[in-house]
Amino acid sequence: MPSLKGLGIQIGDTNRGLKLTASQVSPLRGSDVAKIKSFEFLRKDAIMPEATLQRTDAPTPLTALTEDEQLFRDTVRQFADESVRPHVKKMDEEGIFEHSLIDQFFQLGLMGIEVPEQYGGGAGTFFEAILAVEELSRVDPSAGVVVDVQNTLVNNALLRWTTEDQKKRYLPRMCKDTVGAYALSEAGSGSDAFALQCRAELKGSEYVLNGQKLWITNGKEAGVFILLATVDPTLGYKGITAFIVEKSFPGFTVGKKEDKLGIRASSTCELILEDCRVPKDNVLGEVGKGYKIAIETLNEGRIGIGAQMLGLARGAWEFAVKYAQERKQFGKPIADFQGIQFQIAQMATEIEAARMLLYNAARMKDAGMNFVKEAAMTKLYCSQVAERVASLCVEIYGGYGFTKDYPVEKFFRDSKIGKIYEGTSNMQLQTIAKLVMK
Ligand SMILES: Cc1cc2nc3c(=O)[nH]c(=O)nc-3n(C[C@H](O)[C@H](O)[C@H](O)COP(=O)(O)OP(=O)(O)OC[C@H]3O[C@@H](n4cnc5c(N)ncnc54)[C@H](O)[C@@H]3O)c2cc1C
Image (cartoon, rainbow, N blue to C red; front, top):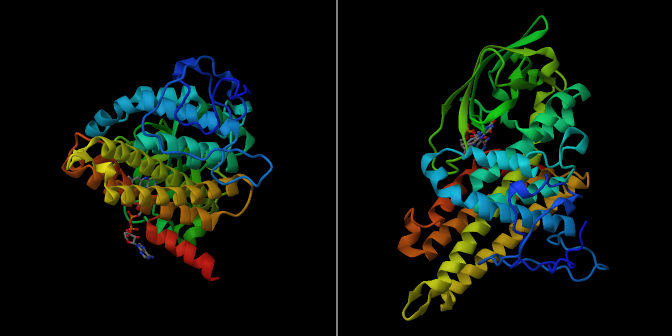
């Protein structure tokens, strides 16, 4: 690990960053950031100020990052600013994710952050995966969710529930070149996920799957799907089983791609299973235990969506602050008016509160603590903050904020999904109520 101070970087000095491209670095590893080969310093405009770690003998504040985490975050931040940002507008207009960016996600090690090195991953922490999602989403929440689904849902399920043989077959691919997707929802089962109808029947050495999945993020790009189906509908949730399904399996088709309000570059697709043959060896975990896999995977996923929403709120806030300092009315920048200053301060406070919920939940997960309540609170609150902040940022831009010529209307559109997927806000409230009232 190089001494950051030796490189001239002050911990917490967010006006500086490392300049590097995906081709200049080896995959980022949690404890191996020394692999950065080339860098130069550059100034960044309007970065939200962050805490500076000054004492090491006091209890660590929630928002303080280790040197490794800070370098990891700065590297992803710079990559997002320099490599993702130029594509954001076009990707949103066309509703297509730039494929070369996915290649760069793999090169940077962002698609296998927590996967152990022996399978080709970064051997990092869940917290680092959260930092990556936050930083990418600050620039483009669609980029954030591609990396989020890969790490917090798919790799997470594969790491936790696979046999050694399955790990060897799938994890190296997930780190190298294969996008993953997580297929639970159907046309008739969203919040009531375990009412799913997709059938899996054992025939010899294969399961034959029939049915349809809806709303599947990464559906267009994915090569591997964690897919939930029932082996016996009469068993209710106890029939639900998770399968590792490959795009190339006979009888598997990716159907319609949704035309959406926000996160338009992130593909959301229907999946069609017509006598889709899945080897018995591709059951994930135990037959009939898919409900447990689904619930527990989504608990981690919710922290990831919190990170996406926090990054989004920061991205919108940073644009609005810069704009307020430049836009003049009544002969001075609108940022000089106390009314605008108070709005900026209120948003910064809510972002800070959301960040603390998020980082605490992620650290609890890494510490092996029960984090179900905190994950639900994180998703609930971060998505509320994202929507409020993005909306207010549109107002700070005035009429310009309402046009597609400026970036905040996209953040506002993108924010809406945070309250819907991976469990609607009502479902998060239901979980929280159950846990705080028991
Ligand atoms: C862009 C996008 C990407 C997605 N990606 C994925 C994915 O990758 N994988 C996947 O499996 N799914 C995915 N989904 C599906 C998503 O998780 C569901 O849309 C979500 O869970 C809500 O289900 P629903 O749409 O059927 O709404 P419904 O369940 O029909 O809910 C409609 C409304 O009723 C409320 N409601 C329902 N039940 C209750 C109750 N008991 N108490 C109070 N209120 C209630 C809800 O809060 C909501 O406001 C995605 C959806 C979208 C839009």
